Image (cartoon, rainbow, N blue to C red; front, side, top):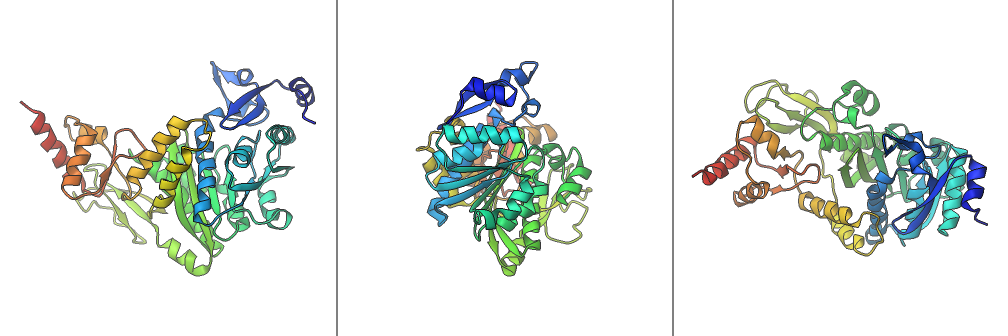
Length: 407
């Protein structure tokens, strides 16, 4: 029997409210009670729920549904840090491809709230009170090997990655959220080195580097367990980075995956950037001779699986997503850049750096394509151009377009 809101408030000792997200209804802490200067602060609430992550949950639900086209069907999902249960319950209710979910949390009030939310939505979810790593460690024997493990912590996912990989079925998917963007984007490089074993860089494409560092960390963790990985999807949205990688057993697959690890060299003087697979990468720019910054080791392989990206666009049209317009805009942008090379140029920054007027981004992309280069928009920034054209060529195109506009 599902308790009334007032009964549950008396039991848990804090105010609650009913919200809708996607195809589910959720009982969550009353958001206004945990606001600072009018803005809800999830970390202040007794049970974690963040409405700003609705788009992230949309993508997860759509991806779980899309996996049916890639041989992963009737999914068992594990979400070891469930909070109020929003993500896991949405998997169960909205994705027909999800058969069962195991949701865990160490917070007893979170477990109770997730149980109520599962009942409220008739979700095929089992909710347990358990520390995340402990749950993942015993998951195979207690519930079976999950096809999808979704780790969405407050901060870094690093402490949970190895156990998530261990418990996955062969060919299963690990989904990770990282909200510690300051270390990953180079504000606190030593913290990034400690947590992820890589050096970041504060560049205009630092959010892409954050994704690549996280993927590289997963790749190395998997290799230690004799597993290989394939990147399926990722996105950098607002305050977080999100990655999805498929994990396969086998030492050879691990060795093959490690070939996707390298360094990115960036020249802050001429904006040249390149990938280096040398153990000790050069510290001087091959274009202008200046000293370069080095990011890595990180993932330099593809960030996306093209067929999955196409399937996500199709699936998203049918699902009751919470942020449908944002989802459609994101998936269509990613589909444009899916086959692009590592890194991109922020057009406004490039033009400021070389004291040039800023032309229209679409005009630059079109001209680069006419010259035979790959060129597209990128979801990482509204001014970004992903291209394999050298920096000097991009600058020449900007100058050419500027001359055309001049009277």
